[in-house]
Structures are given as C-alpha cells and as structure tokens.
Amino acid sequence: MATKKTTNRLLIFILSCATFLGLIYAARGIFMGVSLGRPIDWTRQVGFEFLFWYVWAAFTPPVLWFAQRFELNRSHWLRTVLALIAFGLLIAPLQSATEYSLAYSIDWLRHVPEVEMQRRRAILGRAIIVEAFGNFIIYALIICGHYAYEYYQRYREREIRAVDLEGRLAQAELQNLKMQLHPHFLFNTLHTISVLMMRDVNTANQTLIRLSDLLRTTLDSAGTQLVPLKQELDFLRGYLEIEKTRFQDRLTIEFDVPANVLDVLVPNLILQPLVENAIIHGIAVRPGVGTIQISARRQGDHLELTISDNGSGLTRVDPISIKKGIGLTNTEARLRQLYGETQSFELSRAEGGGLTVKVSIPLKTNESQRSED
Image 1 (cartoon, rainbow, N blue to C red):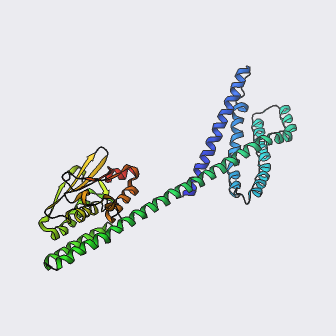
Image 2 (image 1 turned 120 degrees about the horizontal axis):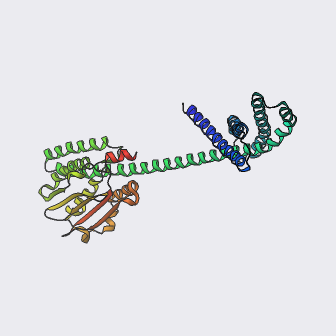
Image 3 (image 1 turned 135 degrees about the horizontal axis):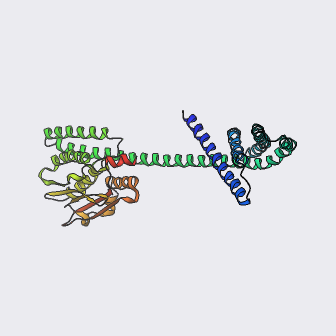
C-alpha cells in the first residue's frame, strides 16, 4: 500500500512538473508571437509545447527506474556513469522520435498541406538528432535530480536514526537513574523496619505492609517517567507514614499544594529522595521536633517544587557532600535529561536554619503532552 501511494505521488509530481513547464514555454511562444505581430498558431505554439513535456513525463518513470538500478558510490561510480550515459544516448533520440511522430500525426489529422508534410519528412532524421542533444541535457537533469533526492532521503534517514538513538540512550539513562533510587529507598526503609523490630513488632509489621504497598506502586509505574503531581504526592505520603513510625512526634510534615497544580506532570519518584535527604541529613541529626515543608506553585510557565526543613542545614553539612548523595545526584541528572536547560535545581539555606531544595520544571499536563505528540 505504501509503495502504491508513493508511486501515485511520484506520477502526480511528474505530471505537475510537465504541466508547469508546458505553461511556461507556451506562454513564451504566445508572448513572442504577439510581440512580433504574428498570428498565434495555438496547436503548434501551445499544444506542441505540452506535447513535448508530456512525452518527457511518459519517459521519466523508465529513466528513474534505470537510475535506481545503479547506485552512485565510490566503488562503482565509473560503471554507473557509463551505464547512465549509454541509456541517455538511447532515451534522448527515442523521445525526439516519439514527439515528432505524434506531432506529425496531429498535423496529418489537421490536414496540413502535403508540401509541408513532405518537407517535414525530409528533415525528420536531422531534426531528431538535433533535438536529441537538448533532450540529453534534460535527461541529465532528471538523473541529477534523482540522485540529489536519494542523497537527501539517506541524509534524513540517518538524521532520524541519530535522533531516535539519542532518544533511546536518554530514555535508558533516565530509567537507569530512576531504578537506582528503588534499592536506595528500599534499603533505608528496611533499616527503619529493622530498628522497629527491636521495640515494637506490631508497628514493624504494619510498616512492612506499607512498604509492600509502596513497592507495588513503584513496580506499576516502573516504565513511566512522568506522572501527575497528585500521584507523586500520594506515593510520598505513603513513604512518610513509614518514616513517622520511626520518628514518632519528632517529625512534622506540612503540605502547601494548591489544587490547580495537581494535574501537572512531574518526574516519577522526584519528591521522595528530596524528602528522604531532608530527614536523614536534617531531622535525624538534630534533637527535638523537625519540620519538613513541601510546597508547589505555578511560576509563569513553570512549576516550582520546594522542600524545606529546619534541620542542621548548610552550617553543619557541607553542600558539596550533600550533592554527592544518591538521591540528590540522581535527581539533578534526571532533571537535566528530561528538561535540559529549561529546569533548575537549587540548594539554599532555609529561613531559621535548615536546608531548602527548590526544583523548577516546565508546566506540562497530560493534555499538553498529547497535543505535542
């Protein structure tokens, strides 16, 4: 079906070109007749111009077919050139003979005087040879056009393959980065359960059930890079329930997420490692109650996600060493892979101490994503 459709398109293109060239040459003949004050012979000055180019339209598919049999490359270029020249020496006079035969038949049907017909028969051989020179140039232009188009097609195919390969490599890198977070999150949670087993077996068992639910969620979305913010927050709340069983009243979580951003697409598993970093490096290393604030805001055409804690902050933890952690390092790398220069990832000192992590990504929803596709 695709081949037939391509062939039909090619035939339409050839006929369109022949018609366009016929119009140009017919207009030239009419203009010259008018400028010289001669009467216009519509059959010869208009009809025969279209006849010439339509005969070439009929000969073009065989010419293209022959050119496709010979690939123009370094190893066989001489054989290809010689074959094309030989075929051109056949096609050029054949086109002339066909055109003159049709023109002669039309004039015979028009009852052109016999004297004129005899004159044309007398010069027929020379006329075919003379016109064959011009036809060979047209033939060469068709061949050049064919190889130029073939070269362009191959260039486009290589470009598409390169883009596709680049996309596959980026997708593989993203998947690799995301999957690194799963065991990281799992090991930390299992450590929490291990601590709970020493003091409260029932709570440890409930925590293990919650962990099972979270793992099922991560497996269900293993191949998904972008999810609605609402789904990401639901997963985060499940993770925080596990952490609160460990820290009890020492951990307070505050959410500030308006409803108008819940459908915005965010990287899957983007918030959990940031919150985990706040708990491990901020809340766990300080006495007293720790608070983590999670907020989301629309800022123009971007979504801004902020995670702040009142933990030890940058005064007790070197920010360079923080960036070397698995969670923050992978988060930065995933953001660069997904959004390039349109994203930002910043660490700063929180008001009153602690650390603030701010992520800015382009606003995208399921509807906008489908429209782009």
